[in-house]
Each structure stands twice: as structure tokens, then as C-alpha cells.
Length: 251
Ligand SMILES: NC(=O)c1ccc[n+]([C@@H]2O[C@H](COP(=O)([O-])OP(=O)(O)OC[C@H]3O[C@@H](n4cnc5c(N)ncnc54)[C@H](OP(=O)(O)O)[C@@H]3O)[C@@H](O)[C@H]2O)c1
Image 1 (cartoon, rainbow, N blue to C red):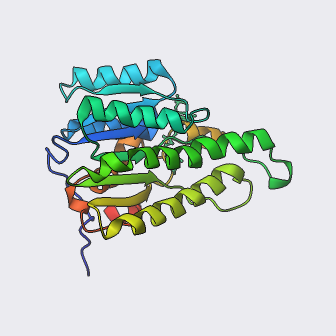
Image 2 (image 1 turned 45 degrees about the vertical axis):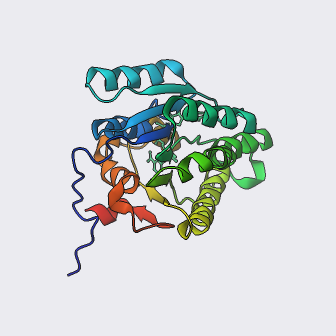
């Protein structure tokens, strides 16, 4: 039987040493776990999110653990415009001089509703936060990523092209295309690698909102799904780009 390189993946303790990694939606759920896990493996993490007290808690957690000092960058992805992302990229350049990793994790659920009655204003908000924002953020950061010796862009995927998933499902499908197009455009001439991970069901606020009646004790916690997030953000994934991974490949 073939053993995949990702199976039972064991990241090196210093996997992300000296890397500067931006995590969106870093204040809660999977983003919080990823930010802490990246910091635990040596990265300097930039915590991007919209709720400052949540970001501060993650910052404190990282500091208390003695990991490299993090930075906080508050942005509401629903309202941010191209100029806000340009300012962010300029700040990263000034503070760190480079960007080695970008985790597009933040997402908003919107509502589970048939398309026929989906509220148009909510549709725009969800598409803005989940799809347009990652595009603008990527565009603003590409030059910085190009300058890294081994950069990664990782998208958090969710394959939900089925009834009632509305703007969330469409935004995630768009994100999948964005990932593949970016991977194709960067594969030959850059050291940027671009992939996505679908973590499957994880016990978070977003999951609770989507499945309020679910008995969720059996679901994985964010800390339990970190293997692919580390693999795709570090040097071990240098040879793959344009791939959409699932947790199954790590078991
Ligand atoms: N949980 C699952 O079962 C599951 C399965 C597949 C994929 N995913 C994906 O995993 C990723 C993380 O979700 P999660 O499950 O960890 O949910 P979560 O706990 O609700 O986390 C979502 C994060 O995104 C942030 N966010 C939402 N809207 C934002 C905005 N407008 N501006 C800035 N930040 C914003 C949230 O900030 P606030 O807390 O401040 O609102 C939060 O930090 C998402 O991309 C989701 O699609 C989750």
C-alpha cells in the first residue's frame, strides 16, 4: 500500500522558524488554533480579524507560551477596500520586510436559505468577506510573497455546492478557483506555493450556527486538525501547488 508523505505527518518542532505568517480570522476557531500552532512552530504570526479583544486573547496566549511575539492587525473584511489591503502590505513591509505565509481562514456563514429568498444585501456581505477580501488581500501581498524564499498561500476550503448554502457555498467555490488560478500563475516563475485544505466538520461558532441542533461533542476541535495547516504552510509542501487537500490524507 502506498504511504503518502502527508500520512501521520509529524512537523519538525522548528518547522516555521523565522517565517512571517498572516492569518485571517485569527481570533477564534480554526484561525486561532492555526495562529497558535504556527507560533508554536517558530513563526511570527500577524493576527488579522475584526474583534480586537479576541485577537488580544490570542496574542496573550502566544506571549504567555514564550513563542515569537505576534502582531495584531484589525480589519473587518466585510467593509475593507483595496486601499486598506495596500496599507496592510505596506505595514508588513515596514515591520517585517517580508511575508512568507498567508492563511485565508476568515469566513462568515451568512444564512442557510434557498436562493430564491436569499437576502441580496447579505449575499454581497458574504461574497465581500469570503471571496473579494481574500482576492484583494492576496493581490496586495503578492509582491511581498514573491520576495520570500519559500512562500505559501493557503485557503481554508469548504465544499458546499448544495441546497441552502447560498452565498457561503458560492464564495467557497469561487475561492477554490482563486486558489487554482493563483497556483497556476505562480507555479513556474515564483517560489510561492498555493493550496487549500478542507478540514471537514470542526467544533466552532461557524459550525454551531450552520448546525444548531447538532450533538457536537463528537466533532474534532480546531487543535485536532492542525496537521494539514502546518504541512501546507511549511517547507514540506514545497513540491505541491494547486491542490485541495482534506484531512483524510493526513490519517
Ligand atoms: N468549522 C467547520 O466545520 C468548517 C468546515 C469546513 C471549513 N471551515 C472553514 O474554516 C474557516 C474558519 O471557520 P471556523 O469554523 O473556525 O469558524 P469561526 O470560529 O466562526 O471563525 C471564523 C473567523 O473568521 C472571522 N471573521 C468572520 N467574518 C469576518 C470579517 N468580516 N472580518 C474579519 N474577520 C472575520 C471571525 O471573527 P469573529 O470571531 O470576530 O467574528 C473568526 O475569527 C472558515 O473559512 C470556514 O469556512 C470550517
